[in-house]
Length: 248
Image 1: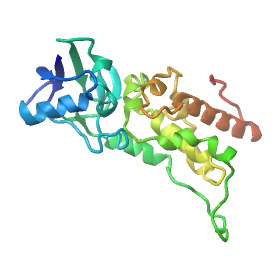
Image 2 (image 1 turned 60 degrees about the vertical axis):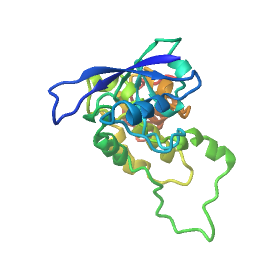
Image 3 (image 1 turned 90 degrees about the vertical axis):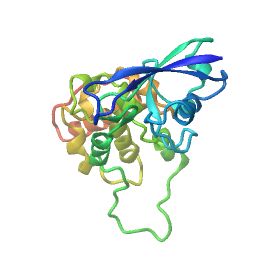
């Protein structure tokens, strides 16, 4: 069938503002949307800019807004976004990040926020003779969060940065949880200053849009709320006031 891709275009070197451009592509219902974009790039318009790499939902490079939802082009089938011949599929770049060209965004701010939570194991205890052991039950506390591919779909889907651009973001907070929930990690207090602030974990309003957008099925909102609970427990243990804005 033939579908029409309505793509938001912007080249900062030549354009003052973004514009939409339409391309008609022959595609099977089971083709990936990424295949359609590659067809355009190869045979219709070599100037079209978008990122891709593994094309198997592992690298996260081809995240974009497809019909208003944040998704990976390589994991989105044509039949999921086009209901028949002549259907129009609108494609836009991720939100809140500066557009470098067309569907390519500058992710520097996203990764700066991610790095701020120290996304690595912190443990200064003497090394054991072998590895630091961990039970299956301990691993399962944070297992799904290890699947994050840093595609920024959750960040773009979140409504909070519309009014609070300094919000740490769902990916950063859920990855902070991944480490502070790890029985081998000792870095809770080191991460606390970036998490326990108005623009940190408390800015989350539980819209669940991040969880809906995650291509890896991570329960992001739940992990954020678990992080809030850890901070509350820490404050309570110190006799400090707590924030009770917690939901499941």
